[in-house]
Amino acid sequence: MVSLMRSSSGYKKAQFFILSALTIVALMYLMGRWINASTIPDTSSTAVNSAPFIFNDIIEKTLQTVKLSTDCLELTYNMQEYSTFVKDFAAKNGYDLRYDYTIAPPCSGADKTSRTLVFNVTMSSSSMVVAKNFTSPWP
Image (cartoon, rainbow, N blue to C red; front, side):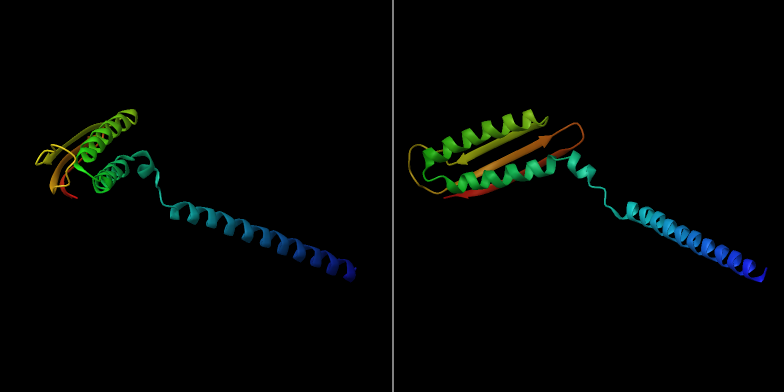
C-alpha cells in the first residue's frame, strides 16, 4: 500500500509540474503579445498623407531642373514642361497644385546671362495646404 501512495503522489507532482510549466509559457506568450502590440509605431497616418513627400519632391526637382538647363531657351522650355508635368501629376493624385514661376530678366534668346527664378508653389488637398516661395539663381 505504501508503494501505491508514492507512485500516486509522484504522478500528481508530475501532473502539477507539467500544468504549471504550460501555464507559465502561456502567460509569457500572452504578455509578450500584449507588450509587442503597444511598441509597434503607427505609421499609417504618414502613408495615407503623402502630400508633404510629393511637395518636397516637386521643390527638389524644380531646383534640379533649373540647375541642369544649359541656356536660357532650354531653361524656359524645361520650366514649361516641368510645370505642366507636376500639375498633371498632382491632379492625378488628387491634389490642387498652384505652380507659378518668373524668370527675371525674361529670356530673349539662347544666351547664358545670369538670371533669377522666383517660385510660388502651393499644393492643397481636402486635409492640408503646403506652400513655399523661393528663388533660385541661374546659371
